[in-house]
Image (cartoon, rainbow, N blue to C red; front, side, top):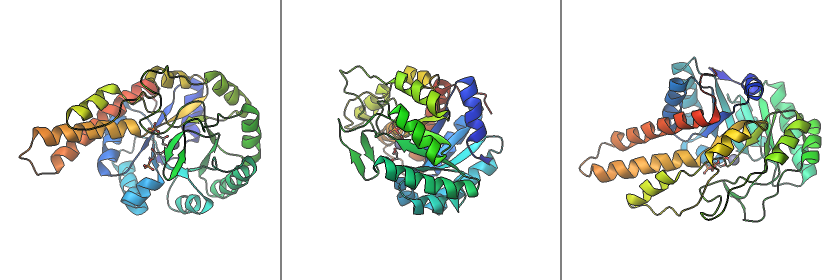
Amino acid sequence: MLVTSTDLFTKALAEKYAIGAFNVNNLEIIQGILEGCKAKQSPVILQVSAGAREYAGSIFLRKLIEGGAEIYPEIPIVFHLDHGEDFAICKDCIDNGFTSVMIDGSKHPFEENMRLTKEVVDYAHSKGVVVEGELGKLEGMEDDVKVAKGEGIYTDPDQAAEFVEKTGIDSLAVAIGTSHGAYKFPLDAKPELDFERCGKIAELVKIPLVLHGASSVLQDFVAEINSYGGEVKGSQGVPEAMITEASKHGVAKVNIDTDIRLAMTASMRKNLKEMPENFDVRKPLGAARDAVQKMVEHKIDILGSAGKI
Ligand code: G3H
Ligand code: 13P
Ligand code: ZN
C-alpha cells in the first residue's frame, strides 16, 4: 500500500527506531527490497533520484513501484523523490503518484533555500503529499553536485528551527558528519557523527530528522568485489552501531544506496566469474536481487523496523 510517511515517522520517533529509505533504479532492486520488507514485516521508503529517473525513466519506476504496492499490499510503502532539485521536478512528482518529495535547496543561500522549500511545501500539502527539506551541506557526490572534502557545513540548530517554522516541512535532512557514496572516512580515521547536534536539532524542530549518506560500506562486500576483479578503493562508511544510535536522537529516516550497490556488484561479479558458460542474464540479475534482499533484511535489523507494519 502506498502511504505518506506521516504515521510511519510518528510511530518510529515514539518507539525510537528508523525507517530505511532505499534508492531504486530497476525491477530487481525493487523486488529485492520488498521481499526483504515482507520477510521482516517492515515499512519502507522507496526513493527515486535524478540519476534513477535518467536511467530508467519516471514512468517505468512509478509503474514498478505501483506494481510492488499491489503485490505486497501489507507493506506500507512511501514513494519518495530523493534530492529534488527545483520546484518543477517536485511538482511533476507530486502530480504523478509520489506520496513524498524532497526539495534539496541546500546548495542555495539560507533565504533562497527557505523560499524554494516553502513554495514546494505549499503545493505538496495542497495535494496531500509530504515534504523533506535539507539544511546544511553533506560532502560527496549527489547527481551533478559535488561538495568537496572540507566544504560540508553542519546543520545549525537555531537556523534549523527557523527553517522548519517558516517552511512548514514535514521532515528535515541534517548534516552531522555523513557524506554520500563509498568514500566517507579514510580507513585509518575514527568515524564520528555529531549526535549532540542532532539531538539539539530534534529538540528544537520537533519534526523527524533524516540521515543521508548513511551507508556503512561493509568491508566484506568491497573485498568480494575486488576478489572478483573489481577495483573499489578502501574506505569506511558510517558504522552500523551509529545508525542504530541515530534513531535515538530524532532520526526517523535513514538513506541507503551505496550498500545496495556494493552488494549487487559483488554478487554479479561472483556470478559471472563462476558461471562463465552462462549467458542467461536472469542468473546474475536474480543473484543480485537475492543480494539486495539479504542486505535490506540486515539493514532492517540495524534500523529496528522489523515487525513495525
Ligand atoms: O544521494 C544520492 C543517491 O545515492 C543517488 O545517486 O543520482 O547516482 O542515483 P544517483
Ligand atoms: P549513501 O551513498 O551513503 O548510500 O547515501 C544515499 C543517500 O543519501 C541517498 O539520498
Ligand atoms: Zn542523499
